[in-house]
Image (cartoon, rainbow, N blue to C red):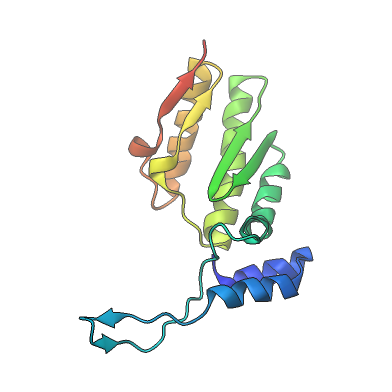
Length: 168
């Protein structure tokens, strides 16, 4: 999480800047590297990240990702995105398999653009999974995402599409 971007998002969304400044100040103090118990580096000041588990972390993360969540909502894809700490869940509804393919593609494109291009975040392939209401729905979602992932550098569709549960 880049501090400069977080500050701009906080201004845009009306987040209390006094609270943000205090939170960032408690995180941005200088760190030192100790070499061989004798040499100490010059201070290193972080420009990314927040204090995990702090009182403000959840609100800062919501402020940071709110535009991405809204982009999915506004994509017209009958989809919604939720965040929980550093996890993102994309839920897509559809009345047919064709609509599912369209909705998955549209929602994923909106989420991918906002999170990776605008915010510079990455998705961890090892944490990704799909749940579907039928085997056919799962296959449609997988095909659609494989196609989307080829265009998105850093994704390896063979390793990140896993079936954790499927109800027939």
